[in-house]
Image (cartoon, rainbow, N blue to C red; front, side, top):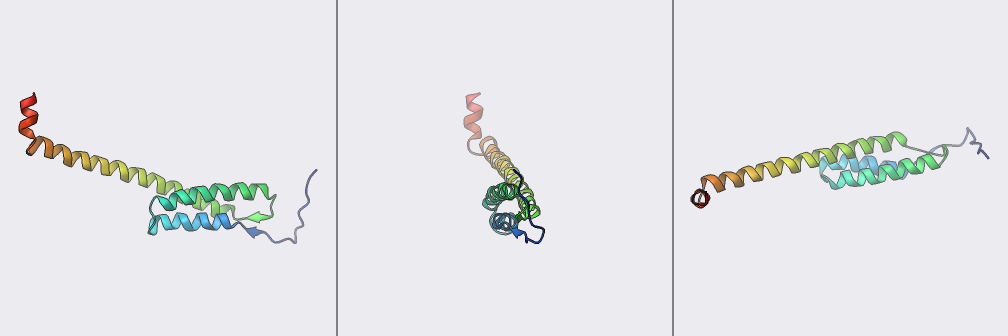
Length: 109
């Protein structure tokens, strides 16, 4: 059984897609990583809602944009974490081999 959508019926924008877009933008403005997580969750919820509505609910482009911004935010967050770990290990390693622990390390060899 197929449903017939009246062409005069206005399409409503999914509120989940709007939240996804706002969260994706907020990820870069003041809520790093958490904004990306919220953008991804609400973006996928919006796409599911839009798919199940049979054309009554719109906002797929907003949801896709929120998802893209969310994945970019996750990627940048992981990259930042890895870079921070490298810096931490570099600083810690330089202190260990050149600082007060160097005599202990050389003695253990």
